[in-house]
Length: 244
Image (cartoon, rainbow, N blue to C red; front, side, top):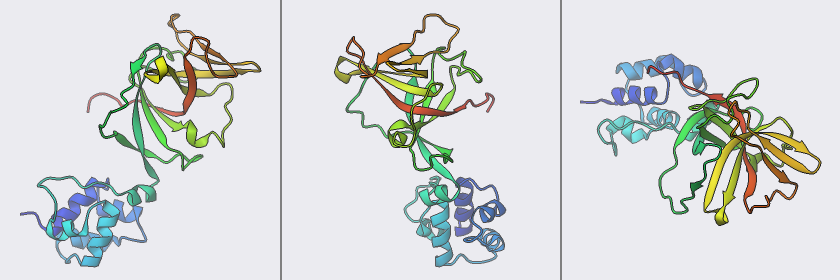
């Protein structure tokens, strides 16, 4: 039978802390290391006040720690937003796939829950939403100094959130959205921006000659009825190593 001390340990581990010391170091004002160790060992009973504090920090309810209330067997605790904020982490939404030349139908009635991943808060723009895109294709495999390869995951900032703070400049790597057929189809792609007095050019950086730049005039409307806009600025590129 699972006891309160077992649930406390499970909550702490699910919140990302491998040991009581790690948790105490992360929350020095809230957690006494020796007390947490005693609580987890069962040498010291977990008070209601302590359970409430642990629950707030580890993303579970105090009642679950004490009594196992409202929890399915084996259910994993969820890290609270307060915990993430104190650790300098935020939830980034996985927006979808960027792939040059591929228009996908927009599902306006998609009711699926968004997929989120935990990311470090952006130091320059801590309040901006972070969007995550998975890269497909070879349109940026010659970008310097760091190419973007298929399978890379791009961590981006929503341009809508920072456009009042950041002016687009040549050299920026951006996520561009092109829509057609009244917005029913869209393409998301990564490009490097080049600005000129009368136009903006969004360039692929590829060894594949099939990829061409998107060139638009200052009205940001292409002649063929395709609408073009910057939706995100690329901040980081991630790629997990195989084997796990």
